[in-house]
Length: 324
Ligand code: NAP
Image (cartoon, rainbow, N blue to C red; front, top):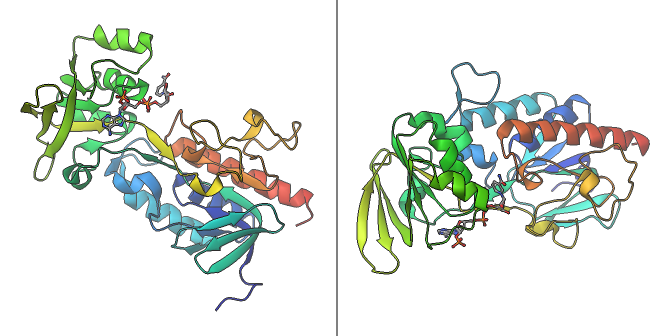
C-alpha cells in the first residue's frame, strides 16, 4: 500500500499518447519525476495503426505501437513512472490537485491533461479486426499507402469530404458512402468533391460489413430506402464520422467547448490570467492541456507531441513561480 507521501507528484500526466509521453519526457528531464496515468488503452490512437511514415526521424517509417513503446521507454529513462489504469475522478478545486484511480488517490502540484480523442467507428467487428490493414481513420497518415487503388470514405461531414478530396491524390477512385442523401459538409467542400471526377457518392447507404481476410477487399452496403444489399470491391476504408474528445472526467471541472474539447490558452472565456505566457493553460491554474483532447484541427502525432512539449515547459515554469 502506498503512503500519502509516495502518492504525491509534482507533475501528474493523464493520458499516454504522443502528447502525454512527450510531456513526460520533458518533465522527467526537468527532474520533475512525473507520474503518467496511462489508462487501460495506453498509447492512444497510434496503437491502432500499422506503419507511420510521417513522424520525423524514421527514414523507413515505424510501426505505431513500436513508436509508442519507444517514447514510453525514453520517458522512463529519465524517471517517469507509469500506472496502467484509468483515472476515475479528479478534484481540481483543492491544492494539491487530487486524482483518483479506483481506490487509490494521487496528488499533484501540476497536472497535464492529454487524454486524446477517439475516432468514432461504425461499430463493426471486421472494421476493428482490419484496422491498420485497410481500415484507417486518418487519410493524412495512411493515404499514401493506397496509390492507384480504389477506396471508400464513410461519412458526410467536412472530415469525410476533406479526406475524400485528399485521397484522390493517391487513389484510382474514392467512393463516399453516406447514410443520407444530403451532405453535412460545408458547401465549398461539397462543390469541390462533386467536381472531382475520381469521387463517386453512394447516397442512402450504410456499411454493413467490411470484407477481407488479411486485408480489406470490399464493403457490403445496404441501401436504406430499398433495403437492397450490394458489394463494393475496394482496398481501403477511411472512417471519417467524427471524433469524441476524451473529456468526460473534466465536465464541470475544466472549460470545454461545445464539442467537448478542452479549451486552452487565449481561447479561454474564464481566463485566470490573460497576460499568462502559458499557451497550454486550462481554466484552472496549474492544470495544462495538450494533444488531440485540445486540438480538433491537426490531429497528428507530431502536433500532439509538440503540444505535449509545450505543456511540460508551461508546467515546469509555472511550478517555478509557485516555489515548487
Ligand atoms: P460531423 O460534422 O459530426 O460529421 C459526421 C458525419 O458522419 C455526418 O455526415 C454523419 O452523418 C456521419 N455519421 C456519424 N455517425 C455515423 C454512423 N454511425 N454511421 C454512418 N455515418 C455516420 O464530423 P466531422 O466531419 O468530423 O466534423 C467535425 C467538426 O470539424 C465540424 O464542425 C466540421 O465542420 C469541422 N471540420 C472542418 C473542416 C474544415 O473546415 N476544413 C475539416 C474537418 C472538420 P449525418 O450527416 O447523417 O449525421
